Image (cartoon, rainbow, N blue to C red):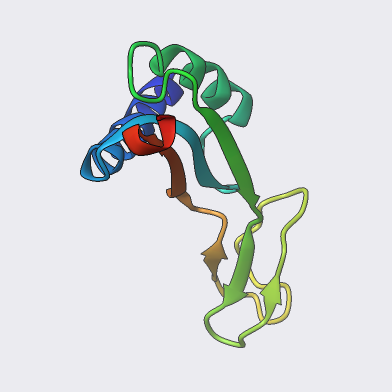
Length: 119
């Protein structure tokens, strides 16, 4: 399950930023997850619950923003949202499509609790 290594990477990124801010703990990690990734959302959520143990993110919530797949024909400029089937050929002119969105897997932001807030 590659979602576990992805969850661990997400936590590493969040912890590095939290340490820069001298945070006591991470409360929330928001990520953007594209429809065109090979990441299974439910598996990532499960893996996150495992990976966050004994880290600054131990009590953090994982918020996932789903990013739909949008494609555009490089030749004619036609933009589509392939809903059910992934066909990367332009229905207008028959040439290959380029993916505009849906490949994202990025940490959008984190919310932390600082020592000062705790007191």
